[in-house]
Image (cartoon, one colour):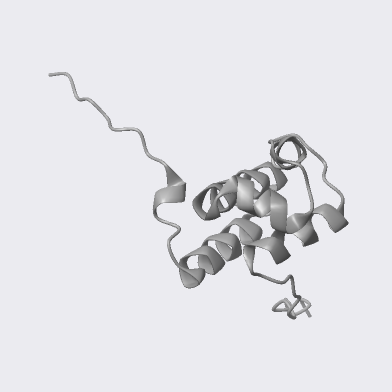
Length: 101
């Protein structure tokens, strides 16, 4: 029996701020930079890559390059992209492990 899989496009389910925030949270928890860049790329695609480029002040090609796995974008670039997407970066305390006695 041959099973045919349908292509999946993550950007199609990123349809609300809550879905996007949860997605980014999960990706950050994993700590994989390439996956983070892919995630932001999916989010930018969901919001419209041309509009995100315009709102961030980056050229479209520069945006694509910055979000490509293996890229090492500057913090300033990622901050501009998140602002263009309508999000801000923040930090919260991590749960600390208790030292073994």
